[in-house]
Amino acid sequence: MQKELQNGAIWLDTNGNVIHAHGGYILEWKDFYYWYGENRLGDNYISCYRSHDLINWEFRNNVLTTRSATKIHRVRTDLKLSNEDGSKVNIERPKVLYNEKTGKFVMWMHMENGKDYSAAACAIAICDTPDGNFTYLGSFRPYGYMSRDCTLFKDVDNTAYFVSAARDNADLHIYRLSEDYLNVDALVNRLWQGEYREAPAIMRKGGTYYMFSSYCTGWDPNQCKFAVSDSMEGRWSILHKIGDSTTYQTQPAFIFKKSGQYYYFADRWNGKDYHDSRYVVLPIHFKSSGRPYMDYEEYFRP
Ligand code: GAL
Image 1: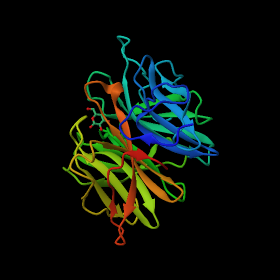
Image 2: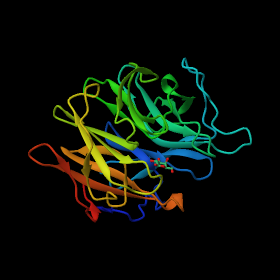
Image 3: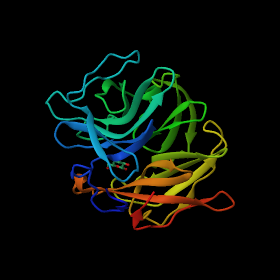
Image 4: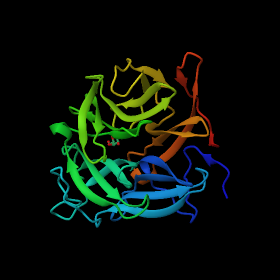
């Protein structure tokens, strides 16, 4: 059993294999934490690992691959999981929520054609279990808007939101989802127009919502910024810096809470060798004013 993970080192699963769950998300479900993320090896798109302690990760399944089942959805979507020439599409930043009403696990992600970033679409997949084979429901552009870097956020009343970069990444949109999480219900916010925010990650502490995001510099790290709001649909503050100028060479993946402590879960990308990308997890602290801050730490010890 491992007791800690070294930030930026190669992280191994309980079989001794390198963990590939980039641009990911953690869902807490029953006794386990489920970590979903990008794994571009072979036919894979998304892999899932699970853990009791966030340190020892058991590989569970490649939950979305080129061979995943597809199903026609009530929303008009593109169901292709590979291109006509047989090449793979590109699936990024998968996030998964459990829907209390339908009892389904719903994944939202960013979909591209594998050649460039012109598709700029979101995509959905669904499953009866957290780590089973997800059924792909296809990709689409919410209300016709481009949709790239994204995240999901489930509020205390189970209302869920999909946040994604629109208008060639210039604006960040917040969409409220329908009750079953299988469509967008309303575009409730168009944030920071022209400020090119990417990699959104959201948390709620008391009555305050915090959104972290990066600037738009591809695989290269930049200064993370955060903003606050009293509600997902309300007015968000302007952006404030957090961390150092490269955010310790990372980009946000998601924010996670364990035993009252919030953690910034990030990717340290290797743009030249994608599968050599690493993970960095840092505790988020708060000043008495409510302002969040974080410092670099060598080890992740939740
Ligand atoms: C980043 C984005 C990543 C990936 C990358 C490709 O800005 O956050 O998810 O799309 O660009 O260059």
